[in-house]
Length: 397
Ligand code: ADP
Ligand code: MG
Image (cartoon, rainbow, N blue to C red; front, side):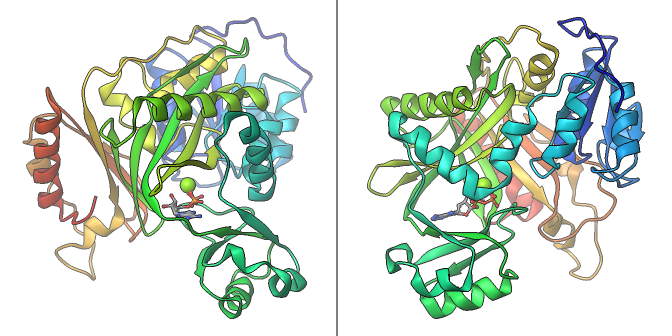
C-alpha cells in the first residue's frame, strides 16, 4: 500500500474520489461527484457494473485484491463505500494511504447483525429505541435450547444478507432447525416477528466535526423483503415520534463516530412503539427521492461529508413518492422474454423522474431503477403515482 498522501482538506473539486462497489448506489455517488467537478474511480470486479460504466476510472478487481486496492489508493484523494459487504480489512488498508469515510470500524458494525444488534441495544438504552428481542443461533445446541419467546420469528444470517435474502420465517423449533440447515448453519440471529404498522428510515449525514444534518423520516413499504415504495413524508407518525426517530438515528451516528451518509431503519409497531431494525453505512434506497424532491440529495451529502465540505440541512421542496422498478416489470407482457416497459407513457405524466441503473439484464427481484414522482400537492403526487403504477403493472406499493 502506498504511504499516506498529504491530502489538503477540504478536498476540492478537481480531486479524484473513489468508491468501493459498482452498484447503483455507487453510480449515483459518481453522478453527484462528477456534477460537482470531481474525477471518479470505482473498484468492482464486474466489467459492466452500473457505477463502473459511468466512472472516469474503473479498477476491475476483487474487493480484497491488493493490487486493485493499491491502484485505487494511488488514484484517489478520498474513498467511500456503496455497500456494507465490502471487506472492512480493505477499507482499513485504503485508510493507510488516503481518507476513507465511513471508517472500516463503522462499516464493520453494519456487516454483522450480531455486532449491529448488540450495539443498537446498548445505544438504545439511552435513546429508548431498541431492537426487537433476538437470540444468537451459532451452534446446533442453540436451536434446541433457544427460548420460545423468540417464536414466531425470522432467522437471519448474520452476514451477507440484503433485500430479504438470507432470511427465513419460522414458527416452531422444528422449522427453526430446518431453516438453520437451509442457511448452511452459518451464524444467525433469530428475531421475534413483530406486528408492524409502518416502516421508516432516517437518512443523515455526519461530518468529521460531528455536525449532523438529516432528512425527515420517510415511510417505506417492503414486499417480500424488498423495498417497493418510499413515501416522503406521508405517514401516521406523530411529531413526537419524528423527534424520537431522528434523535435515535443521531445517537447511533454519534456513538460509532460515523462520518458520511448513514441510514437507520425503524419499525412502528401496532401498539405504537418504535423499534430500530438495522443500519446501512451508506446512502439508502429509501433516500433516492432526495435526488428530485430536495435541495440537496443524499449522494451530494455523501460527497460533501467525504470531502470535509460544509453539510447543509436538507430542505424538501416537493412531496414525493418513490417506486422501485424491479426486473419483474420487464416480464409483464411476456413471461419468457424481457420487454422494455412503456417508459414513454410514464414520462408523459407530470412530475415523473425516471432513474435506470444501466443493468444489462432484467431479472425478477433485481433493482433495475426507480421512479420518483413529485408534484405541487400530495394529492397530485398520489394520483400520478397511481397512474404510473397502473401503466407499469405495479400492483402493490
Ligand atoms: P435486509 O437486510 O434484507 O433489509 P431486514 O432485517 O431489514 O433485512 O428485513 C427486511 C424486511 O423484513 C423489513 O424491512 C421488514 O419488512 C421485515 N422484517 C424484518 N425483521 C422483522 C421482524 N423482526 N418482524 C417483522 N418484520 C420484519
Ligand atoms: Mg432492511
